[in-house]
Image (cartoon, rainbow, N blue to C red; front, side, top):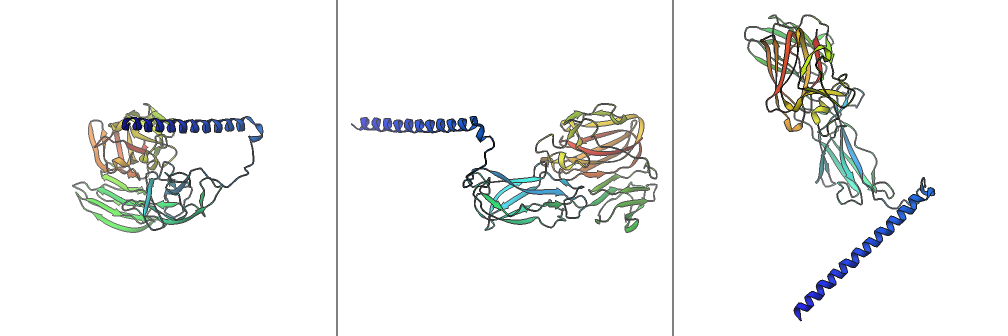
Length: 397
């Protein structure tokens, strides 16, 4: 009798499951028929919504982060969206809820919905948004922590609304100038702003130097030891490398290669002959061609395209006719390779003229400015074979 009862129970359970499945199927079929009827009726093509009491959608509630190029605390035409910046969401009691990194257009998105169990923002209340500032950086907009109050709003797409979105958050890296002195020369370095000297420093032979730059600094002048040069400063950290007496004279005619004219599409291997140079293992790519590629976005400073070392392998550009190498902006392609070491070697024929090791970041380009008068080949490589991003390569011919 016991075994027979167990079988009866199992059969009953199976019957209940079967009936439930039938009910679900019938309901789905009915819903499908109603949907088909609505779509078949032209009167429903542009129907005005009559019932606003239910919300079943999910909306991205976003925090926007930008690279504050002019450091004025306002998102302006010269500023750029930043990718890969971490933003955290906190509840009313300060408890951690979720985190998201900004995407290729600068938005950190948090799902908001009263009907989805997976949404980060599901209930009314006050939520805090905190932008994680990279080490050494600052926020000219002074609003890395903000809060917004949410309340129920039936009929809205997500069922919740707030008064506004968080205000755009601007970030800026420290502006610095670094370089190395040759063993047999001394010089004087002057930091300038609108033609006025802000700071002067003696540079001793065989030493490395690094100094922080004031926001208003716009040029650096180095004099003495046959190392004379003048450089207009960029909004990014600058490295002069090992300074050579073989420097560009006065104010040379400069040509900027920004890689935007390599292709009008998303991607193309840079062909030999482009800009009058030979190229190996360098590709031109639109900054948003690859999803989640922080350095391709943050390393882009002009136009839409950057160049990068193909699959992280050593790359070169060269010419039989000597040319001057003024500067280039270089970045790491991915946050996973933050701190990757780049090696940039410059040759004149078979003679190695310069060799500099540089630490790369995917958050901001580094302005490498060797200002070499005459070379025939540049070789680019990374220690761990991660991709190096290049933009605004400046040469003289």
